[in-house]
Image 1 (cartoon, rainbow, N blue to C red):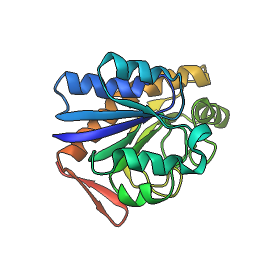
Image 2: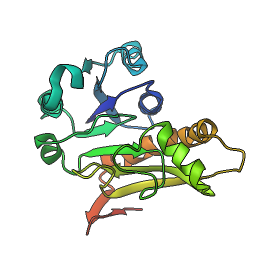
Image 3: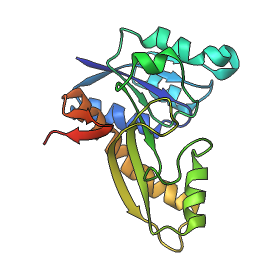
Amino acid sequence: MFKIAVLVSGGGTDLQSIIDAVENKELDCEIKMVISSKEGAFAIERAKKHGIEYHVVSRKEFGEHQSDKILELTDGKVDLIVLAGYLSILNGELLNKFSNKMINIHPSLIPSFCGPGMYGLKVHEAAIEKGVKYSGCTVHFVNNEVDGGAIILQEAVPVSFEDTAETLQKKILEKEHILLPKAIKLISENKIEIINKKVKIEE
């Protein structure tokens, strides 16, 4: 069985989309654990409700050793780490051990509106301010450059003149909930290959 760890920071709607895909048998995977970057995140309640092991590894408690603690929890236990609305920056040996085995979902069409400081509503505010006609979401591999890993999947949504950061966020979240389980499925079925920093998907 393909095992995953899901890293979260907030409400956990992306986590819920993975839970649903597993329970609906769309994903032949086991969510081995959920790791939250903070106490009180609603995503923890989702893990509890579905009987999933969970841990809180906060910057406050572990400081610069946060990534080391996550590696300690996951090393040898999971095949893939999934960042689902996870807001801490990871570093160190964790990135080496899980090279091409860690993915993130970002709420824009990378390389637009990404990188340090671009998270949550800030991404959508920047897109609205720029007046883009399309935004969307990107699932990509995680490396030592923020939002810089190879792109796996993208989905675009139209941005209307009337859209606010909040309405755009809602539209993009709907796509995230489809795209993230899809990317996990492709990886779990060995249908992804990285060639020259680009992802080739087996049809």
